[in-house]
Image (cartoon, rainbow, N blue to C red; front, top):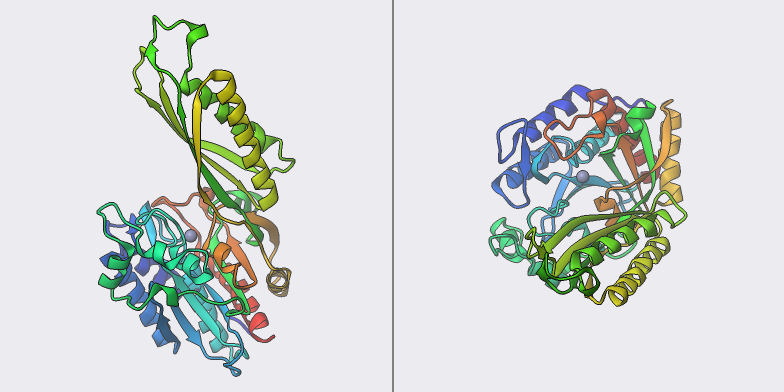
Length: 413
Ligand SMILES: [Zn+2]
C-alpha cells in the first residue's frame, strides 16, 4: 500500500479551523458550545461528509464520523481528539488528532485500502475544563466514569448548566445514553502534539505513548489562630500558613521519595487569610496536584501527604480539613496497540521514542472501554496552550502517516 499524506491540504485545514475563534488570529479561543465551537464542528463535519464518512452525534455532542468496514458488525477502530480550546490557545492542541485522523482516513482511501473493521473518527466534547470546571467531559461520559446526572448539573461561571448549554447547541436526548460498554471499540489511537520539549530536544519525529499519567488533587483548609504580628509571642502561635508551608514541603518530599521520576507533586494554590503583613495567618488554603502513571504509587504519595498533615496539625495545634477534589486513574497503553504504532514507524523508517504522557487526554478515559495508545509529534519549544503553539506541516504529516498505517493494521485484525 502506497500511503501519501496530503500535507498541504491538512495544513490548510488546520489554518482554517484555527481561524474559527472567539478572538482574532493568531489567538484561538474555542470554548465548548460557543458559536465558535459549533462553527468549528460544522467545518470538520463538512470535511468528513466530503470524505464519505457517516456522522453521528450523541447527547453531549461527541461526534463520530464512520468509514464503514467490510465487516460492519465488528467493533470499529477509533481515532480522534478534541477541537475545543482554552482561552488564548493555539491551533494544534487536539485539532491535529482530529484533522490528522481525517487525513489518515482519506490517505487510506486514496491508496485503495478498504478496512475490514469500520474506522471511526471521534471528536470529543469539552476536553478542556474551561467552561464546566472538569476536563474530558465527553470522554468521561463515554467511559461511564462521570455520572450523567452529575454531568447535567455542572455549571459554568454564568450559572448555565451543561444540560442547558448542550440543549441550546441542539444536542438532545438523555445523557445516560452517551456511555459505551467495554469492547465498543477494538482499539483507539489518538494523535496529539507532545506539549513538552522531549521529542524536539532529542530530534525524534514520533513519540509512542505507553502510559498516561493522571492527577489527583487535594484541597486542604487549615485553621489556626490569628493575632497581632507584634504581640502574639512565638511559643503561643498557631500559624495556619506555617502549617500549610510544612505540608507543601511534605508534598515535595512524598513525590521525591516515591522511587520513580514519574511521581510529581505540586502545590499551585496557597491562599492566606487575612493576608495582612502585620497579622498572624488564621487560615490557609492550599491545593495539591499529585500525578503518576502508577495508581498505587500515586495513592501512596497521597497517603504520605495525609500523614504529614496529621503530624503537622498535632504539633502546631491547628486543624486541617482535607478534601480529595479529583482522582482519575492513570492508564497503561495496550501492548498490541503500542506494537501497531511501533510497526508503523518501522515500516516508514521513522525513528521513535517510547514515552509517557504527562498531560491527560481523552485517551485516558477511552482506556476504560478500549485498548488505547497515543502518537505524539514534536511541537516547537514544547510550547502549548499559547497562540505561538506550533507544529510543522512535516511533523504533522509524519504523525498522520504513522496513524494511517496503524489504523490499517488494527482495522485489518
Ligand atoms: Zn489536547
